[in-house]
Image 1 (cartoon, rainbow, N blue to C red):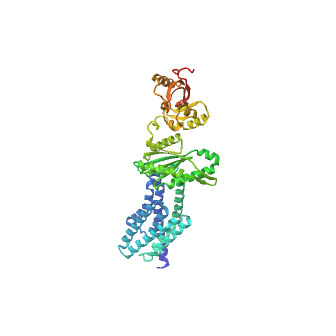
Image 2 (spheres, rainbow, N blue to C red):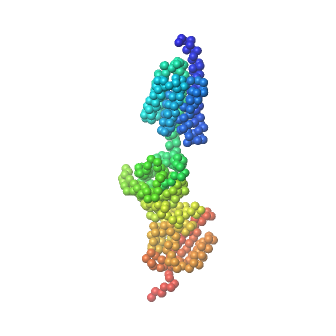
Image 3 (cartoon, helix red, strand yellow):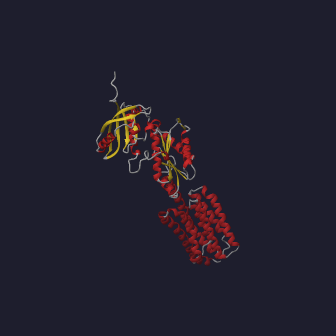
Length: 491
């Protein structure tokens, strides 16, 4: 072949290479700009199958040839651009199918066809074993150059080897910068997605990450949700500092993660609150899982530079569909665990409708801040005091109330004040009380109560509605021991 022939061949061969490179870039950019933005779940499929399909269209109906090296470019791009192992394998299989179709179309079945497929298969195996060992730009460029260069060395016995080499070199040069930069962009994008979906301190899922995790589940999938809260974590932060608090949170998340399976989710909604989502667990198995989680985070002290620290953890669980309504049930069970004295587990199925208010009521959780404040303020107050929610469930009491009623806080939490009743108070007293409170005015009266030891006593109570803005959220009561008018006078 003389020099003038090469000169005449060069322009159309270069144009041929530019057209093939433009086709592949267009397919990959269509995936990035259209499929990923509208149908993100199909993005890996479009990236894996788009290029082989486009090359098959060109091979049979495009009117121009597809040199073997272009298929190797599609193969290496498949392993550099796709983050899903499954779709990497499927994409490689699609490239092998396209290579087989190209070889049969050009040479029919021959030793050349077998060599082409064997070579590409070997390249796919090498890429599967090596490409994930590094992802920096220089490494990716080296992988690209080696694979494409090796492919071009076996093209010397084509029908028109010089034309194919010019086409392949042109397309490979155009695609080199795009593929390497696109691969780097994909890694940066995956890193940003990971940062958005995970908590930077504990590596647990964020709320956004939980949404992505839930989208991968079937809406009918059921399981177990566990809400966790470190008891008195604010005290730890205030006493030891936030650095120690952060170390405890990281260690706590690590212990939980060690007990979970690959398909489970550890979520940090915020602060010292964590949630565990476990598909496919229920019944006695679910209770055992929660007990195991509680032991894992409480049995051993947390070894910190400042010394070992032991912490209590409250947990609430709920079973059912893995949706936000079930998570709210776990939150309510956690609230009961906190109100019953902390460092304990409460299962959602153990709470009745009285301790789990419906959505159209003001849940007890909304009075949590007020209950904590009330207990702190009333701690040393000599007058017995109680705070109940708008549906009449006890949210907070002080020590004077416990002494007066003979019942401890765990016995009173989430119960109605009627737990103290002797059952002998006339009904008109209750009607008068609710009528007065319903008008927004305080009420004062006397009840006949009974202690656990059977002692009957009279309680003089003053009950005041608690309003947040114009909305009733609960009732505050002061209780005193009233003399019994039927008792004989002292001698």
